[in-house]
Amino acid sequence: MSAWEQRKLGNELLFLRNNTLSRADLNGVQGDALDVHYGDVLVKYGAVLNVAKTTLPRITKSGQPGKTLGDPLNDGDIIMSDTAEDETAGKCSELCEIRDRTVYSGLHTIPCRPRRKYASGFLGHYLNAPVFHNQLIPLMQGIKVISLSKTSLSEANLVVPSIREQEKISATFSRLDTLITLHQRKHNNTYTE
Image 1 (cartoon, rainbow, N blue to C red):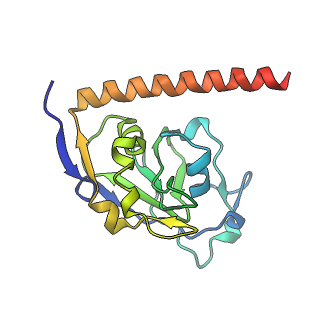
Image 2 (cartoon, rainbow, N blue to C red):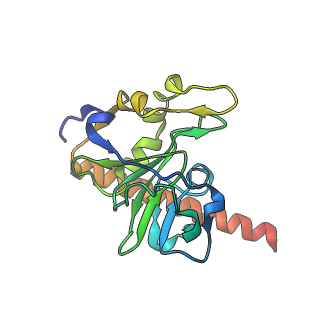
């Protein structure tokens, strides 16, 4: 087992441009491009967001004029919520299975792209873990609405294992996520019958 390396988030992730579209500019049916909204990152999506298995809001064509769409996203990119009503600001989802879809990061998000190779799913799980997220809490600003800046996030520390260890960690947490989801469905079905 190799030693884990300490790295600054700003050196590991490239900050991309998000869009300025509101929920009113999104819909569930029409539009070629998909949008990941910060509210969905906070409450709906997990550490890894499988775009092929998730219905994402679509960008309404009439919502585009005069508004930037930001940078199109790739597998392995991270979408972090930069605002919330509590300390969940900073929650993120790592994208996978984008395939031929065009996906953008929405309002109140910080899209990031790894500057080097990471195991699929590792960053999504790691950046949501208390070991990382707890260091963001002192960086949060605001009273009613809490926010994080790219500048403060840049200084956050990552402790990174080898790719092989990342793969094992990601696989373990992915299996746990699947197990939790199955138990939640079973629990919900018990109470709806």
